Length: 311
Image (cartoon, rainbow, N blue to C red; front, side):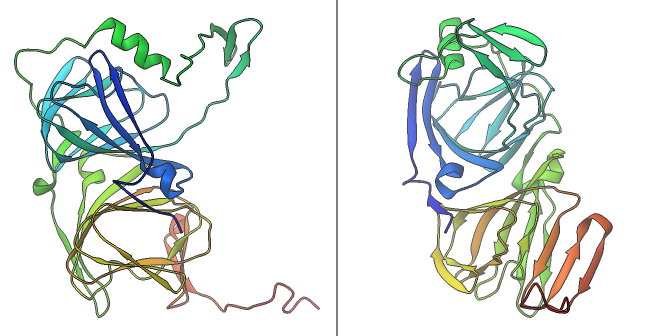
């Protein structure tokens, strides 16, 4: 089904020096494939992660509640509820610190780089470079968390600086209203507002009794939805499942099973998804196919048998 909940998914707590918090593995629980989302709950004064800079993965954070600081390349900016924060790969180290109890969602693309381990030699191959391999602690704690906790927290300036273009608040993003006979919604494109490239994040509010989108399924794009408020149903392949605050729904690409959300009361959710130039999207109710890579939408005849017309 691909449905999890904020309060019921597997979680792990860290308390290593300044690195303190609870991580809930939402993407894994919902069955996401090439993307993920994790809930990070930090106590006041806690830091989320070691300072890190991804080589390929792009991260987008959404602040559910609380206040804190985004630390990026030694520069800081205040963050709070409704803020969207983008960290592009290869743009310098980053992390988060909580001023008050901070609750955030961390969305990201999953990128796996091949690294050959040579256990007898104590080496790993990163490309053509041999680097020392250090085994993780036996309790499963990430090695980088242990090392960062030993180093201590990054230095903070007396006051946060100006907010960069990669941080924007929900209330400052233009609302786009769509109203059709079945679909009635307001969307705010947070991902575009902060300059995301590989994936996007939208805040969606759906009118009671209406749909967020037509039923559809993607060939390449994967989507994750996090319900924030209200009530509604997930329509998935003709079956309906109630959803409400805290539900997380993953829709991997290439399933051939169409999905849509219908609101019962006003339904508010976050929609995260990859941007795939060659994605094909099928709309079974209308029989349309959208070839987004060439900006063509067509309607084709659907047949039941592979061998139709071949004999």
